[in-house]
Length: 200
Image 1 (spheres, rainbow, N blue to C red):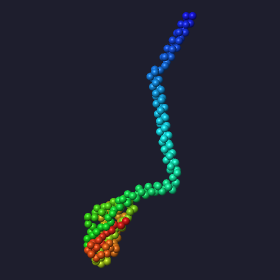
Image 2: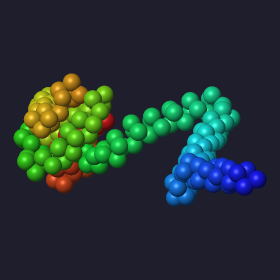
Image 3: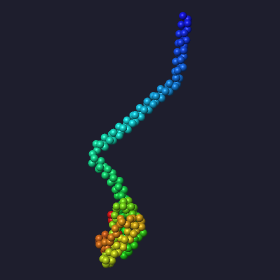
Image 4: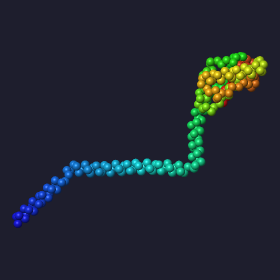
């Protein structure tokens, strides 16, 4: 009887000690649990982020699908036109007249800043064309004044080219004493007629 009890006791001790040998330490098992919980939480967060991105993309797609094809084209054209035209309009020069002394075709250097503004404007778009029109006062013959107006126009074109304008963007013409800016006969009126106009 004692032998049976002793063997039962030994087997009980061995089984309980064997279980304790093969159990992982408490700290390790807690770390594994925490790691698996952290991984699960991270994957859930990632899923939520991806789901939010997907929903946002679907909203954008649905909004664009509701917009008609003609509306989409209209918006695209408007954006392209604004991008191309607005900077050009903002940089267009406001001063368009160069004045000359009596019977002279020479361009005074005081006009260089104004001419440079026109060169910058021309450089912003090579499709822009500039008409450089020469005028005179009514003194002298019509033939002389036509030639003088052409010399003034040509000299302004040369100045523009020297400052960087492309020759093919410029057209130089003379109107002589025709088309006066001021029809009066005073010295001040004549001075206003001795000019070159820069016309776009």
